[in-house]
Amino acid sequence: MTQAAIGIDVGGTATKGAVVDAQGRVLARAERTTDPSAGTKGILSLLDDLSAGLDVAIAGVGVGVAGFVDVRAGAVTFSPNLVYDDPHIAAAVANHLRAPVVVDNDANAAVWGERCFGTAAGKDDVAMLTLGTGVGSGFVVAGRILHGSTGAGAEFGHTIVDLGGPLCTCGLRGCLEQFASGNGIARLAREALVDGSDSAILDFAGGQTITAVHVARAAREMDELARKVLRQAGHALAVGLSNIVNVFDPDVIVLAGSAVHAGEPFLGPARDRLSLMMTEQRRRPVRLDVSVLGDDAGIIGAAALVLQPDPSRRKT
Ligand SMILES: [Zn+2]
Image (cartoon, rainbow, N blue to C red):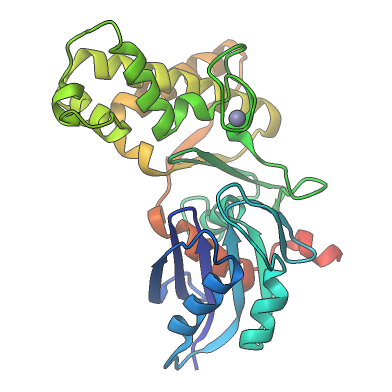
């Protein structure tokens, strides 16, 4: 019988689940809109959807959650957009399905997925930035997931790239997330248009709130203002990437998330500025890859937590 694991990815908007085999292939999948007040109950109902009619042996369940996670207890300690009345996810899932359970932060699961089955396969030092609505990040250091002392580490989106910059949701000013995320790109565009400048961004937005998607579309049409905004976002991303290189010296940095779809007008300036910064420091070039697992990095990564356990857990 095929050996497989279930991976669950609990995001702010969607909760996704998949049955994943030992080679990282998705055998079955399910998805629900995340009910912010459902907490652990949302995970259990998705598990019911997935496990109905399964004919594979399930080695365990991996759960990636947007928030701070106490990995030893398998519990959520803080989640910005979700309410966990019952934060002890591991215990609840184990009771429900009678299978081993591993819980981790969603960005940690994603980088583990890339390291086990994605573009960073076999690499022991990997950084991953997910440039979506915000900026998520995960790090594999010497073959282990970086958790920090309380599970609140590896939040690279909230490192500061502009002293006194715009206020971030975390309470600080000038975080990387304010520039290199979808929300950050949209903010830069709105600011650039405040003086009444003309841009195809306004046509694509059609009177609605400007988003990063409108900016990316306008940039593809060679709109000068949109390309300038994406250059600005790309240069801020380069500062973040340079900071990663200086701290971690990774084999590869993996980029993922919806903002990556803006493509070369965003990623080109980031790559070029990073290259200049590294040349100045006489560093060797670092590999910068776009995720190959894409939107499945979360579910495949959560399953990978079971299929190829992170060695740091064996300490407990
Ligand atoms: Zn922040």
